[in-house]
Length: 278
Ligand code: PAF
Image (tube, rainbow, N blue to C red; front, side, top):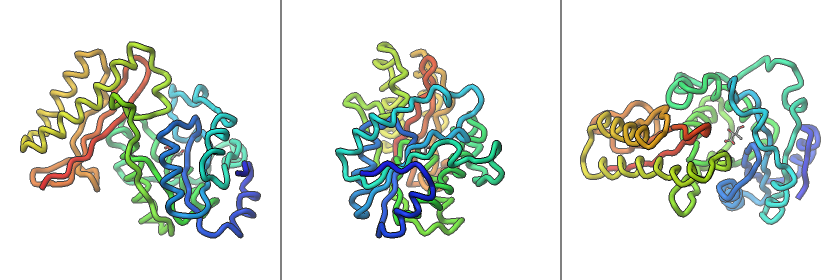
């Protein structure tokens, strides 16, 4: 496994690499990332993992400067997997100008759900992912379903900008109590960690109600918001949406996803559950 830090060196390596599957990350890797890496290994002989904490996708007051940078530990974990290259550029390598001059502007979905609470976040994601796609030129790229809105935006980006890349969605990894694996879980104190699986429980309760034929979306969303608030959460949103378009769900929709974002103390957690009705 090589660690490559420059765009030029990565491009040299890419010339003779054959089929490549790509897993973009911001590092601080956990089992959820390793599941993406293992899935990537099924789609190509060579797996590239990028590690880059992308300042463009952090808003003011968010945790960009505190975001854990753990390259050595990440490399140790990846060295036990089938990974050919870690691409770990520094800030100047990807953003040589003080201000990013060209950005990739996603459609209005970027202002909904998480985007409503994190203005500019998905523009930052779409921009860095486009740059990484242009540098790595993968045949396949794996993205986790935990970041469901991000996945939808990347699918749209690949389709609309004609990236010749197959996007493979990977199921959310969970702890035994249901909590979705996330780098931000480490910010939770002991009490918060015990409380945290409630988010998934509320989403699965809505999913179950939908399967039982209760399609009163707003009532289900409000009940979950009330339960979470009563348990000490600050809820950004709980919403039932169409699973593919992420448009607000309508009666008759069969493919749904229930998404939520809420804060426990200082930690913002997101999760979602897909529901397919017959
Ligand atoms: O999901 C992430 O870790 C990031 O948003 C990504 C896709 C690596 C872009 O910085």
